[in-house]
Length: 129
Image (cartoon, rainbow, N blue to C red; front, side, top):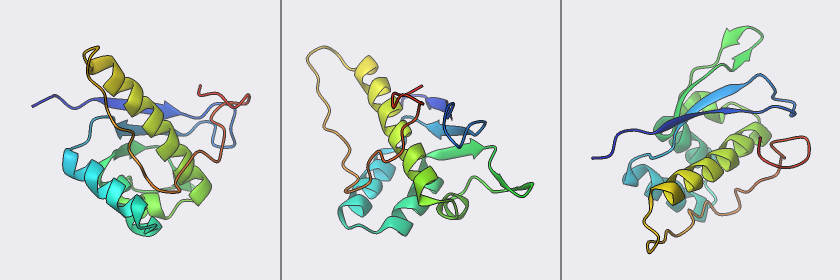
């Protein structure tokens, strides 16, 4: 079994600057399959809950000084714009991780989360920071 690979995402040059979100780059296959299944059916709340439970590890997000737990419910309670930013950034980082761990002759199919796509630039110029 491969060891867990985690990454801390930051969102410089966005309105979420200062947020630090730690995610699992290599979640279990059942988590990935569940996310893809939910994305295909446009069940957004369930998708957010599954992401929060299976991928989100920790974060420094609060509401008026009260820490929001890094759980499915905590993740689903955030603005959709922020959730989409986290998911799209995670997808990019996870793809880089997979590409770096594949042999030259291997390929991987993109994870399809339905209409869940990048709607907020990560950096001020629209590129990932």
